[in-house]
Image (tube, rainbow, N blue to C red):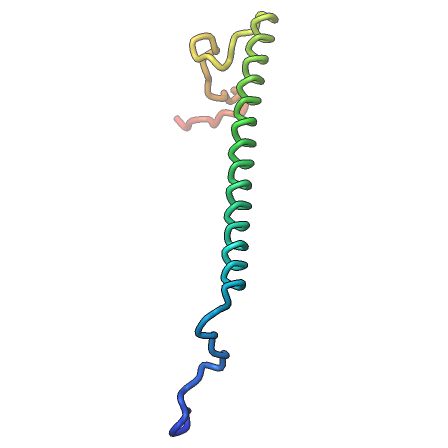
Length: 99
C-alpha cells in the first residue's frame, strides 16, 4: 500500500529518460546482426530443402532407370504399376457364417 505523499512504485528501477548516442548505436548494431543471422539461417534452411528435393528427384530417376533396365514395371507410374489389391485372408482364417 503506497504511503501518502509517495508515488507508487513497481519495484523496478526507472529507465533513464535518454540513452547515449553510443549506446543507441550499439543497440542498432546488435539488432542488425540478429536480423542478419536470422536471414542467413532462413537461407540455409531453404537451400537444404531445395538440395534434398533435387536429390530425391535424382534418386527416383535412378530407380526408374534401373527398373527399366531390369525389366520391372515402373511403380511410380500409375499406368504401368500393377493394380493394388486388398490383402486377402486365407480360407482357414475366414470367419464361418452361421446358416
